[in-house]
Length: 485
Image 1 (cartoon, rainbow, N blue to C red):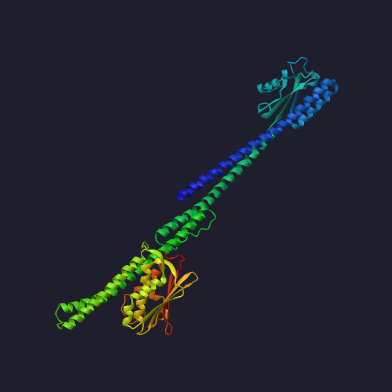
Image 2 (cartoon, one colour):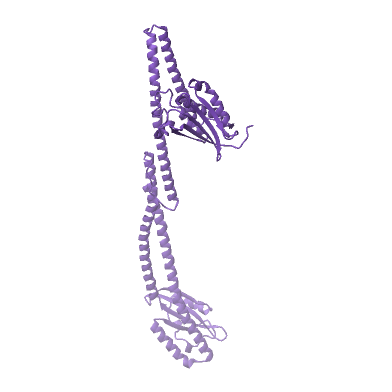
């Protein structure tokens, strides 16, 4: 992760440094051009003004008064430290009269570059150059402009030479300031590059740490990053992942605990009947029981215990199938009344043994829903068998079916052992039996299977138990308006 930080730092820093240097160079170049250009314009305007005045004096024949002008411009040149030469064009005929010149260029030794700009001026062109001058011991700007007569012929030239010391000093001073600005900008660039690189990379480091912590199984860890950008979105995704992993781990632990409890309960439920069967079988095998009636009694008990284990295994298989998400039901449109009546007929024999009466009543003969006929019949059978088991002799079992607010409401009521209120929710747990149901036979899985059947049909099941009104199981299913085909 340090590599990322240094890469971002170097890239960001290089970009800012290069940008700072380029800006500095551009402004330095721009400033130099402006300073030198302004000085050129100043000398150019001066030379052009002298050339114009000389041309006018020559055309008007003001040779007597022009001497005063020459004296004035010389004095001005001395004050400004500028040389102003008015020279005649030796190549012109006529040339500029000596009364209008202040320098004989033929008697003066000038550099080659000066001669070239004078030749250009003699040709009617304005030229200039700057260079170190050994005579003045400084950098000089030389500028020449032509002087024309009334016919437009170039009869002479004005050569202006001015020192660029002040301009050079100004440029040097500006470059020093610019260098200081570049150095300060460089330092600021390093600081900003470090700050922004750290600000950019730190969330990535935190997200990496969060990933390692999550990989270690600490799913409650959060990144703590809140930013309105892509890194903030990534951190938020990591926090969402953390929450989902925590929920998944909690669900996994619950499933594992349920699995352990399930096997513990199954082992407990099977241990007693197996021990009983083994005890009776060993007694018969060892020949301790000789009487035929006693032998038949032992065999009958073995058969009852085997039947109990068979019911337990059957209920476990059904529960396992119902809990499987891939379990497929044969869904069709069915009439809940017909299913309840079918289940009631199947337990008539059990009801007769306890002299119970059973009724199925309803508000609407066409109470339709979408569901698996066999599973709904199994649901009613489980509830009716429980009702028979826990009802007092000579009482009634009542099934009532009603349609209300888009739902099919079915109730199964019996009058017998009451379920304590604090245990109403527990009776739908595996192997749970109400505390006041004594030694009644059963696997403790019937109501669990019933609950899964109801949930598979997107319904709800609840219980209410009261000494006066009996025990009532209420099942709610979403109804359908389709007709049975």
